[in-house]
Length: 303
Length: 228
Image (cartoon, rainbow over all chains, first blue to last red; front, side, top):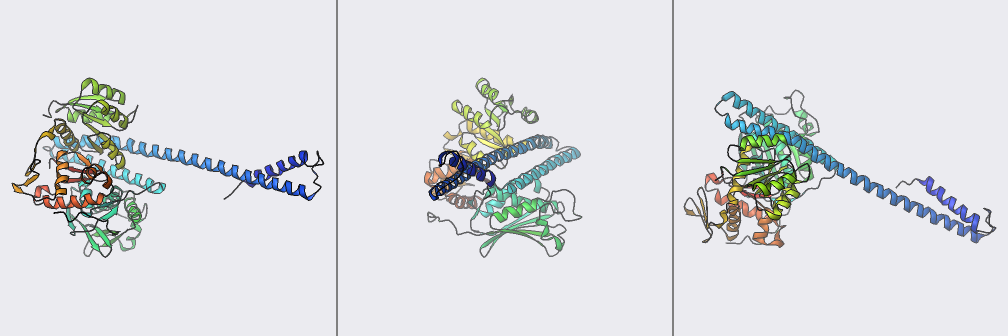
């Protein structure tokens, strides 16, 4: 730990000198005549150095706490206001668009345009979520709230919540029976999974199939999302998970954050993500989560 | 029943109020309040059938408004929140909110929640029989019929289904489920719930339209879907 030694040392010397001047005979001088006096003056010096250091440390600790408090408060205020200020107008846009959508089903082009408004707004909403996640992950303030969850439930709840983005695609689901429970932060890991889904939607032709699977392999559960898109150039299979990286020449749009966030969230769960090109066409994204020792379950024998 | 009910919107956001007014105005009488104070006053004056409450208000948090309303009124309250704060949602439900919606939401979702809230307010609990499409639950006989055939459930599965059915359409927090079924000391053992919900879903999915009958609200709880 670093102390500002100057003032502490100076203070100690100064007080020792004052003591010497007034209280060590001969009074009124700085001279020291015997060994006993040297010991006294030295112990006095040591004591004042210690007190100086202690005072300094207390002051420093106080300042740190204060700064932390302020930054935490600022962070929370910023977080709340960003999500409120951006999400509220989007709510009005999406809400209005969904009303129009229902009223206009008879008029083809107007209906299509309204769907477009809603879909675009949902996209902005997802981007905001990703930006907020990005901030959250970088803030070091994140704590996972883990609970035991059912894999199939996890996938289906996410499909349900992403319905509006998935409407243009055929979803094929293939979840193995009786998978073990996984110990995860449901809503946070959902962001990772939804990002993989959204990635598949964005980079594959409308109406094409997206296959979602979950199976156990040894002590892991492997979730996968496979699309019928153009696949990923093999030199980029790893780099696509880097922040702000986008495959050169790919369709515009996107910040290059979704996959990086997915990776980080899954790694916080002691898992991993990777991508592979499928035989033929398309890419598969995998999410591996370790199977932890299952919780005890006393009353399964119930009739 | 829904037609003509009084709806109070407590939100300072002009754009949201306007969109809600236009889209719900045909079915309900709409009242608006732009501050928490005004909202509480209007709950007293107007006696609305449902309150839609935004969490962020200029003069107070929607949380405080909710608590104050709950001190003297049982009017159904649907809270509008933003994503990412599951703990807040649970706290809201435990403080007496009837339901919540995460921004951005579609009007269809909101209409479903409003109908659900109105149905519960009209005191459906007294019924000894619950009916939803092909599903019938006779609470007195503890009997569940699916397409007129008896569905064999374990005691725990039945209790879970009963609790969800009594709140059909509304979210039931997992804490609530755990407390009611396994007792307060088991509240942390949420894996019990996962296993039983999975079993229950499997049994109910004999009926194809019940594939997604029990909806998971991530981090909050479960709800029975009342319309498909």
